[in-house]
Image (tube, rainbow, N blue to C red; front, side, top):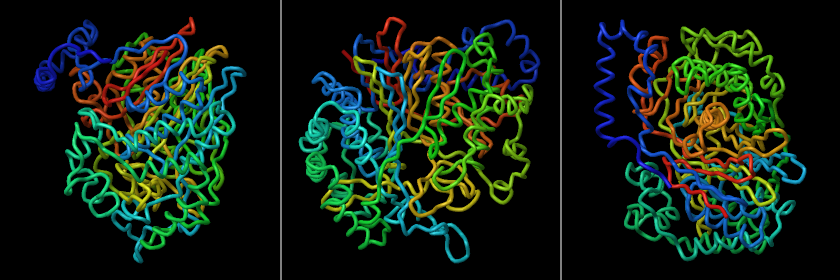
Length: 611
């Protein structure tokens, strides 16, 4: 449920623009510090998120599911009510998302999950991320002159990495699930076979409206037949039926290995061979999910655990929290210019380290313990000038003194517009078992390929590798040799499924989609709850900021910051870039009495349901 706040969006926008002009006038600029001191910014000018809504938390006493789509949330809740545990519900929700969000995540992709045991308090991490084909090479996306081949890593068969979602779901269910495997796949089969109505708020609408990936979809016959009618995407109010996907899911319910060694695998491999793709039966047969040790750190009274490499999410979430340290953000006030400046400068340094050090730990040595140590966080904090923004060109990797070679030869004009592709879900059951899970096919409709006869939308996850040092991917992120392509290697990710505990008690499960913004989204939700004492609905809904080192832009939501704050940040040297609201996170918080409170982002169509 969401509620409107303040006044119509158009009026707020006009007022916002007028104030921006006013505060550029010399006489008023001189009075800025006086105004900032004497008045509460939120009392003078209130500009909430562009969605103009604050989500009202859903509350329950026993169990809760929250995801990016109402039908997927309902699928997970139905499993809980049938006696399933958090793992059962998470698997059911994941498969359901694969049907109702074919543009963002699915069985043709991969992801990460964190699992909290209500009995022991232990937290485990499962890596079911996609992997580079065994015949992949470091320079596979460069031409003979060493230049990047346009779109080769984002569209078409060469962009596809070996999928891991089915293997990951079966692995976690095999170990920790309670209900029979066919039961947890069943809701997704029904959604694919019977179809579902595309909603007015669906991200599907924005994809079709702006023709994102439209031509790529039309170029693939199987994808065109499923997702378009006469060359146009299905529209809100229409029913999408995916018969081939229903048959594929039925086969997976009977035998999950059919995806990797059976008829499904053979179909994928044959289509790849026919169209110049690299995935073979050997790639699919060799795929195995990997259990990893989560990265954990202390932030005030809370223990924050998140995904380790090959995700960069957990490392840099903890790194930024360490840079904040014991700073009394609450005393400054939410979105006070000083707090925003500190967050921005911390983000820039974390993403600089990401570009230098992060990669697949099975292939390169990643200095995780050093990067997440509180001492290192404070070392980086001491580099921050609280009065002046540090230009990105002056920020070096923190563990050595090498020059910033990644930015010397390339220009970064702007930060690409983030989308809601990728999907996140959270589940807590009656025994306080919890799952935080993020999975993806990368960009909208992945590589824009459907394997004929299967309904499987294949990922374009190869774009998450550093296809050449310093070359930005689709999200503007750059990398070094640590994230170079290699056979069987996992591309670096920003996905940040996170579980927070306090005094050995489950406190929160949280995560988000949004490419390179995932880390900063999760960070701000955690701070909103733990530092600013917001309820989970407000924490998910309120405006956000984002900086990722390159390009040197502080990304803000329109109407999200008042004119005085924008003036202050500009005065400190931040280059502010207003973009439309981004992200689609969700979270569940455990109250002191054990009750649950959950919310999905009003920027999307997700819902929370519990009992």
